Image (cartoon, rainbow, N blue to C red; front, side, top):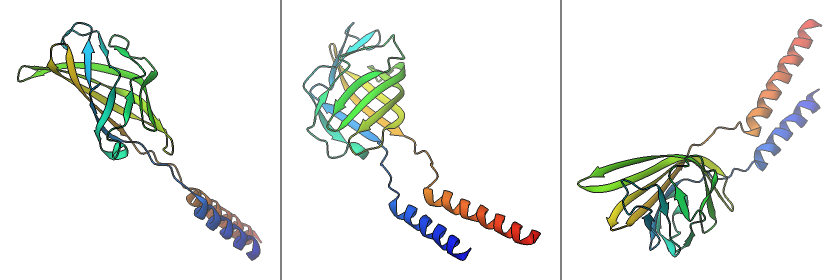
Length: 187
């Protein structure tokens, strides 16, 4: 009996030593050049679609996106239809990351006479060596001249708790110990 408990304890230690965790993706990205987007109407207040031009690069990034300055950006979507709020499509790719937009809402507002458009919603970022991370995103566009807007992109993922293998093994050992104690008490 003691040999079985020692064997179970050794299995728990091996599981603890072999557990590995992927990192969630989260952070902000600012763009150069292609960060200038255009609208179908030339005005953020009345736009029905936004076109993101080629030639974009990452200006700066925080969190998971830090160190990507100068990385080329592929706007896989080309033009975003603001009337289809459940697109479920590949939006952008840069460096090792790609972003799939699942759903969004559009908010338009003015600050000090300047038009802003905010697109926020749900999406999934994935990347080589990273855990695919579902979360919320926000794209902010600020009018910067006739028919052009500066774009900033932010993404936040919430950590989800998954029981560690060690915790589950310890629970199993505890239940086994209770079973053995109950069996001995019946004798």
